[in-house]
Every structure is written in structure tokens, then in C-alpha cells.
Length: 435
Image 1 (cartoon, helix red, strand yellow):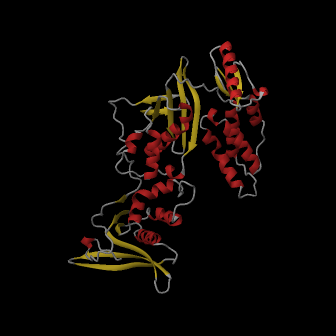
Image 2: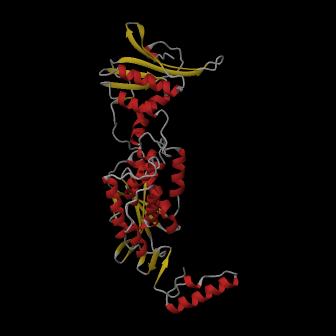
Image 3: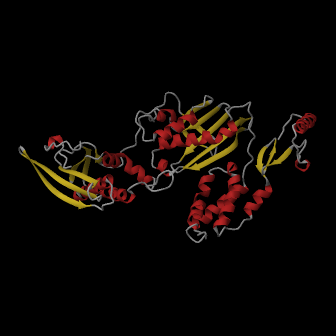
């Protein structure tokens, strides 16, 4: 597509372009030539000085489609809709239920099951496409603005430029957080949404000056000394957000639907994203409870070198200090299926200890870093993510983790503390470990 300032210049430019193509040995289809036009049809859209809009025939074909009843029909409908997603605000939310229906249809003899919510989403999507706005064409002599928001499930953004009539949308972007990010807190989710928006808009912005409006200090999150994000994720976000033409503005509120952003002023007090952590979600302490009873838990799994058979087990020991002597009492010795790993056995031991502590105050010691870290930080993130990894597969020990969440609610007050393993110290002050 070739654009010029006037009709005469456009005609001359077209002749020059066609001559150059002929010299290089290329051929063009005369029937596809749209020469010296104020608007052209290009890849399913109409482009004019007013902007870009979807070809009416495409909109009409989507609007007249009946409700899909098979997998292939749903795939066809979603493919047609997906082409116009840049025109639709929060497209990911509108299609989320339909994608679930499509996924379920594969296990249902390729038949789509419809519910009231899914039918509503189907109609709302068709309505949004029918009323799709005209998107502005990018002007590379002007500054770009990107407004980004995340609601804990969906990432939404709009790319705009300022005109005499206010901000005009150039493209809408939306996507669902993956299961892992759904388990994180708003600061980390805002970082993921910002990286998503910048990456999606890169094909239009192409290195031009860009201001990103977001509700959290995303660079402070990247620079945390201790992060709940994996190194791979942090590195990926850093690469995307390190472009020199990007300026980030932190805001109180960002609403991509209305192109509204309320920046934070320099003298305002807001939470520090680098150190901010939400209030504790449970009463699980990381220090011992004075006067509470003590439990020590351990689990193990090993393969007998002579027989090649795996043996797994778990135990809970209750400890009491009487005067100058310590007494130890075995509370439970739990038979564990032989295929359980050492981590699974440790989880079994912790669940058993929490059930024993129902309604009471206990301090529980474990030599498993996996179990103690899970109890204090990971378990709630996994619960919010539905115990799913980023690829949609379940996390390891999903069923045991679900049991652990229930067991954590049983004690009146509980502390879970990491102790050293295999130290042979048998005094309570040295945090005796039965393993």
C-alpha cells in the first residue's frame, strides 16, 4: 500500500513503483490495483484518512452466524472473530467462556454444551463486533500512549495518540493471565500486563516514543532483591521493557476503556512495590508460639539397593520439656504409598501434624524447606491459580496440597518452622529432628 499527499503525486508515485517492480522482474495483478483512492480495502479492513474499520461484509457474516453446535463450527466462529480483536475492548474476557466450551467439546464427541453465561458471552461478542469503532491510523510524527490495566484475571490495554479531538484508539489489546500469574499479587500481575501490552503494541509503535500508564511501579518490582517470580520471567520482562523509547508513568487509576489515567504526583504517599506485601492471609506464624506444644514432622523415601524396592514413610513426634529432661512421644507413624517421593512424604507428615493439632496451639518443626516454604508463601498462590502451571498442567502433589490447605485451618494457632536436618541434636532448644 502506497500513500501520497495529493492525487497527482499518488499517480506519479504509483507509476514509478510499478516500473521499478517490472525492472526487478515482478508482476502485479491489475484487478487488485486500487489506484488513487481516498479509501482502500486491505486484508479485511477499510483504510481511509478517518482511520481503519472492519469491512462491513465481514461484520455482517459474523453477526448472521448461528450459535455453533460442533467443535468445527466454534473454531470457525472464533477464527473470524479473532481477526477483528484489535477493534474490540477486552476481547479476551468476551471469548473466555467460549474457549472453555471449545475445549470441553473435544471430550464431548465434538459437541458444544451451551449454558446461559456462554450464550450471553456469544451475543455480547457479536454485539461488540457489530459496533466496532473506527481505529485511528498511526502518525509517526506524534507520541504514542499505552494505557494498561490488570484485574487479576484479564490484561487489557489500548494504544492511543492525541488529536485535536482528544485521544483516539489505534488498537485494543487483551489477554488472560496464565494460571501461575493468577496466583501472584497485583504488583506482579501489573508487571506481566505491562510487558504484554508493550510487546503486543511493538508492531505498530516500531521504536517510536511511547508512554506507558500503569498502576504499579513495574521497574521497582523488577529490581527486588527477593522475588516470587522465576528468573526466566523476570529476564523476559526486562528484555521487553528495556527499550530506550519507553517512559513509564505510575497512576492511581488506569481505565483503557475510557482512555483515562490519573498519574501519581511526586509528593503523594503510595505503597512501595519493591517491598510491598499484602496482609498475611492466614495466622500461620514463622516464629515459635510461647507455651505451645511442640511437634516435629519428617518424611522420607528411599530405594533399597539390594531389592530395588522403594520405601516411603512419614512420622509425627510430640516433644515436651519436663524440668531438665526432654520427653518424646511418637504421635503417628504413617504408611505412605511406595511411589511417593520424599517431598510427598513430608507433606503427608505435615498434614497429619496439623490434624493432630486441631483446635489447639502448636509449634511444628520440619526439616523440609519445600514444606515450610509451601506453607508460608506458595500454597496460597497455587490455590489462586487452581493448582495449575503456566502450561495448564497441574502442579506436583496437587491432591496433597489441597489437603494441606484444609488442614492449615484446623489448629487454633499454629507456627511452622524450618529446622536443620540430621544434626543428631536431641535437645528441644536445638530443635530436635526425628529424622
